Length: 204
Image 1 (cartoon, rainbow, N blue to C red):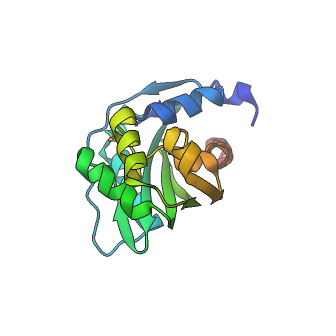
Image 2: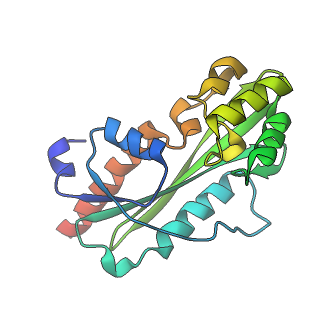
């Protein structure tokens, strides 16, 4: 995607995640932050990727469409951990964070990130899936990590880029950055397609 084309678009990031902001900056994309506040509640029949897709679209739809100018693209995202048919979100505090990591210890789990791109005339939703393997973690390791890193804003109570990732993760299948909360390669490719489709609509 030619960077000069991107300059004609105003990206709006509807996320408070410092990791998503960091990754967008690393892509060389300029964006503005917008505040979107929704209750992250999903229909109970949804599972895995469908939860992440539903929640990112929920956030996008909560943004006032009247604020989307013709050159604006809203970006919303949601990342979840899925373990053996169970949704694992963000912990409410230290005890729940420890409990979550004890559940993940010694097991393989899935990380799903849903991304929604929305303009004044179009919307698309896509997702990434990564498998993550943890070795058996001791209680002392888990307690040390939670106490010192306070992963309360992270799905599954961990950051792959943190200490727990260094000592506990034995391997992944899929995008590393997806586990951080934003699959940058897929996002860039989908953004390119989204802009190309928008340009074709403008020509028509």
